[in-house]
Amino acid sequence: MTQKADQMQLGADHVVVRVPATSANLGPGYDALGLALAVHDEVEVRLVAADEVIVEVEGEGAGEVPLGEDHLVVRALRRTLDLAGATPTGIHMTCRNVIPHGRGMGSSSAAVVAGIVAARALLADPRAVDAATVLRLATEFEGHPDNAAPAIAGGATVAWVDDTGPRAVDLEVDPSIEATVLVPDARLATSAAREALPAQVAHEDAAFTAGRAALLVEALARRPELLFEATEDRLHQPFRGKVLGASSELLRSLRAERLAATVSGAGPSVLVLSTRDDAARRDAVLTSLVGGAAGWRVLRPGIDTAGARARRLSGHPDALRSAR
Ligand code: HSE
Image (cartoon, rainbow, N blue to C red; front, side, top):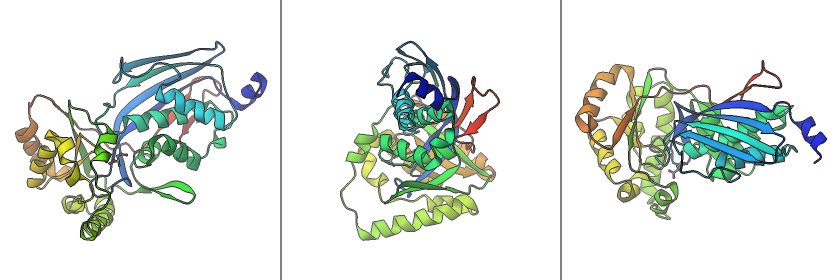
């Protein structure tokens, strides 16, 4: 690709992207259900003529992640631009990270989606990378689409993979539903949490969990009073107790109080879904179980409904494009 041809593919050289945290699984929806949370990372990308990649990371991950071509956002950005036939020389990037790393809040999905959506916004015609391609690229990096789908679309999603690749649809979420995330200091690699799972489960447990996952779709949309029953799971959480450590005990205690608590993604954060009407009871339970406890942060993010958003800062300054 010549520099001139690159320039034809590109429509901007400076974009900023905002992408939400996500909580995957939601209990029984292993590798399928996900919810976007209003905790956002922001990534600013400038294309430069100099043949260099400079990455600055502020906040979460600062001093821990590679700065350069190996940075996850840069890899996703490059992969997407390559696919669209644009290969710019240099990149200057600033990541302002808020999503905790290694806690089951979708930080790596957020990074991948940020890179893809930034690349898309840099293109002269962002439609060259359509919604299906955004999800496919994100899933290539992540292996499963349950965090990527809500990070892209916002709200709740159910994602699956078929012969055509990863797919996702939006789910309705009753506006009275609130999310609380209990974030431990401890981290857990998704790979370690996946290794804890058995190759097979009993048919009875699979049937139980499938029924709860189906119920959860209805509980999220119209029947939040069923969230507790609908978040029961026998497919992954019971096998992850050992690697989850203190989160597993907290989960048990929260559920003993009939709060709809689940491991957030692969953990170790714990997600509590409740309704506005039940907020006082929820807060009393949370105060008694984790109030002031060292090693835990309590986040009360809203539910993000916008998904990943890109804004061009040059090229077409009036363009505000969503990822979809
Ligand atoms: N569904 C994944 C898991 C985590 O529980 O291992 C997020 O992709």
